[in-house]
Amino acid sequence: MSGFDFSKRDSFGSRLGVIMAAAGSAVGLGNIWRFPYILGENGGGAFLIVYLIIIFSIGIPVMMSELVIGRRTQRNPVGAFRMLSSRRPWYLVGMMGIVAAFMILAFYTAVAGWTLEYIYQILAGGIKGRSSAELTVMFDTFRTDSLRPALWFSVFLLATAGIVLGGVRKGIEKSTKVLMPLLFILLIFMCIKALTLPGAGKGVEFLFRPDFSKITGTTVLMALGQAFFSLSIGMGTLITYGSYIPKDNNLAGTAVQVSMIDLLIAVLAGLAIFPAVFAFGISPASGEALTFIVLPGIFQQMTGGMIFAFIFFFLLAIAALTSTISVLEVIVAYFSEQLNLSRRTAIIIATASMFILGIAASLSWGVMKGVTLFGLNIFDLFNYTTANILLPIGGLLIVAFLGWFFPGKSVRDELSNDGSLKIRYYSLYRFIIRFIAPVAIALVFLNGLGLLAF
Ligand code: PHE
Image: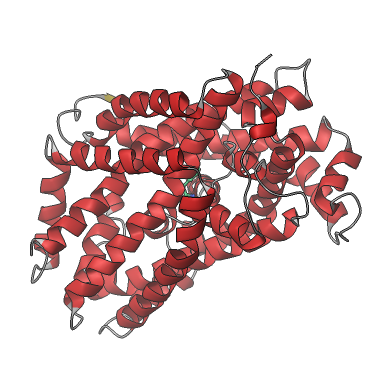
């Protein structure tokens, strides 16, 4: 079908490299920007409990399944499904992933661009000494500007394209090994600072004390969407990365480790943000602006705060970059392998089309404000539909495929590396992907959208 020479495919170099690349994809704005504001809008502690249950019962099994499909076939998501099921249209699941990748990259890179604006503002002295009210105004003024968000979006997209062009192993695999641990340390530091602010206790309570009356169908759907988004699952990112993973890697172990790192970073972000939210008297339901108002506020309270602020936004930009490259990689792998284009041409086409989509998304509060669907602007539409609709449906179809339409023995072989690893929870995993995950996703989904009420 495609004349692509598959023997020339790239691969990850080491076990640590695999973890760092996959964790690099998972950890990003989803943890530090999206998780806190979604939790803030959906009831706090109760949301966290639902989120935890979903990560363990659905997230990890879906991640394992993607890695299995990827490493088994060594193909991009569309090619992988074509290879495993040549007669049925399962490749459409891969196609849906490509569509989701375009939409995610558009709004996600826009937010990544916001981090660059903040780095610029810190250096230009625009943040120092501002009150939280002033920081709110600053954020809104920036977001409604008709040029700046698009400009920073473009810079970030070009950086992403540059790295994907340079190859993943030498660029990202190497740099993330140093930068991710650094982000972790700085985040801990910020938690300590936030927790010692006067009035911090309320924030901790908001995050950890569940009020179960707050759980509704929508809350559960938002938690499901956030889990898929944060773990980078449901659209083939981990099929693609899985296809570069060496045959001796323990896929189940990798999935568990990556998920735990991702969860930890999200909780730490919550611990850095909510105490400050309450200490500064900001509403936890401030939406997309939350992180960008609260974090600069914490830095104001520190000695040498602007230096830390600079380091932090720099690391956040890096964390976003290790995620954007994983999304672009999905599209590029698809273009180059299925359409038999050179990597270079694939990158140019993907990036050029992303410019149009992403500039539109980045100006969603500015000149594109009038363009809405179901009351959502382009940015919110992409953000909402990918996380809450496309990724869960993708995840459902991925597990259903492995659970019902693919020989169990092959799945077992892939997870146990042909019997050389002992896998302890195989029957549990199989039960989950056949019954629990598909049914749970379907119910949460229908209920959350109000199509089924219980
Ligand atoms: N998981 C990334 C984050 O939390 C975002 C992402 C979603 C990356 C989907 C790849 C695919 O920031």
